[in-house]
Structure formats: structure tokens, C-alpha cells
Length: 306
Image 1 (tube, rainbow, N blue to C red):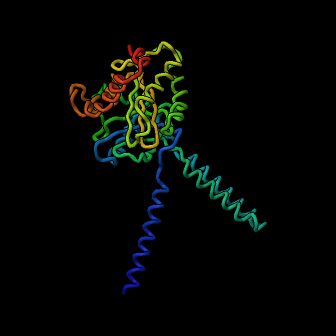
Image 2: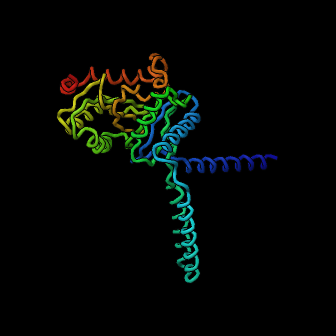
Image 3: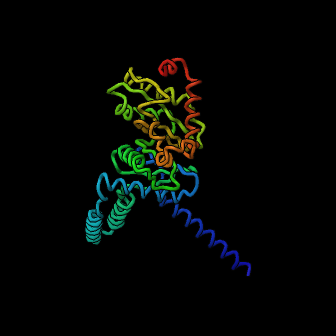
């Protein structure tokens, strides 16, 4: 009896390991160069993801029309089958090229499956209560503004678990060289032409390497280098620079009238009269972080704030 028990335990462990590898291999994760929507929730992350899909697809269909049918993908798969069949026929001629042709055809099939163009796709952040929905849209900020304006007008948030839904324009590694490199073209788009007022909202989770003072001063210097007329305004900034650090990744975005829009807190937008509800509780940490940085900033940063 003992050998059989040991054998069953070994097989179970073997299958469990393979199962973990399989699920880990199929997970979508954050990567540099992505853009999308950053969502926060208190509980029920699965419900939050489901609501994000419903919200984004609903408003994306209104703005851009329904998502394209999957006929082109079928055509591509048929072409791949023909290519694989042709590779199989040529493989019969020479045994040496058989393995190479089959591997190449299989690699193409895997590549097309992994790179399917889906309008919205949830990716793993590795951070509790933090959701990131990757998008193929060129302008996630435009869609985010439309959602906020519609919720403000109708008073219906269409969500229970989503607290904030912030559009993200760039994802990069959480180190200063990569952050500055990603912020450069982003700031050219928002701060190069006309002088404006701006504020920096910084949050970090599971990352102590990026220092708040350093990143705010470096980003402020970068903004001022684009246009000398840009000035800091923490209370009524026309443009807000969003910096969300999640473990080893940094999410960047520049949003107009972010403070007036309740920091994109959907519940607070739907119920503006309840100023001391979940929206304010969710944004207290951000306000404290920015005010603390402003009080400890160097003299040049304080001069810009004035």
C-alpha cells in the first residue's frame, strides 16, 4: 500500500506543477509600451474586471462603433492552413527540411494567437485591488473623458466595484531613465505648444525605490523645459500628470481637468452631493502625497508653484 500512495502523491504533484505552468503561461501581464485603463476597487476584483469590460465596451461601441467581426482572423487562419499544407508538401521532398517547416508553421500559428487584436484585455498587475485593462485604441484618454462626461450628466455610474477608472497613455519600467524617456513624447503632446497649469499626482504600491520627491522634481523640470510658461497649480490645475507605480512598472498619463472630474472616481461623479463618500476616501492618499511633496520641494519648485 505504501508504494502506491507514494506514487499517487508524486503524480499529483507533477500534474499540479504542470497546471500552474500552463495557467501562468496563458496570463497576460503588464509590458512596456502598453496603454489602457487603470482601475481600483476595494473588494471583488473579478467583479471589477467584469464591470470594466462592460463600461469600456459600451462606450467604445458608442464612439467607434461595434468591434470588427472576426472574419479577417478566419481568413488569416485559412491562409496559415494553406501555408502549413504547402510546407507539408515541400517537406515530403526533403526529410531535412521537414522539422524546420513544421516548426515555422507552428510558430506562426502561436504568434497570431498570442497577438490577437482585442479591443480590451485584462492584464495581471501583481497588485491587490489594482486592475489594468490594456487597449488597442490610439486615444484611451478620449474614451475616458467621454465616460466621465456621460456619468456626470446622467448620474449613473453603471458600476458597483470600480472606484476609479483612469486612462493610461504609457507604461514603462519603474526606473527614472525609462520614466523620463516615456514622459518626453507624452509631454511634447500636452505641454509644448501653449503654457498651462499642471499638477503631479503620484502613487506607489509595492515599490520603495522610486522616491516621491525625486520623480516630482524631475518631471516638473521636464515640463518646464517644454515651455517656460508652464506653472504648478495643485488646487486648480488644468492638466494633471498621473504617475502610478505598481511594483516594477510605472503608468503615465496627462489628463485635462482631472481634479474637477473628481479624479475619475465614478461613484463620486454619479453622486456629486456626497462629497465625503468613498470618492474622497479613495483620493485622500493622493492629496496628502502631493501636498507633502510640495512642502518639502526645493526652492525652484516652490517658485513655480507661486
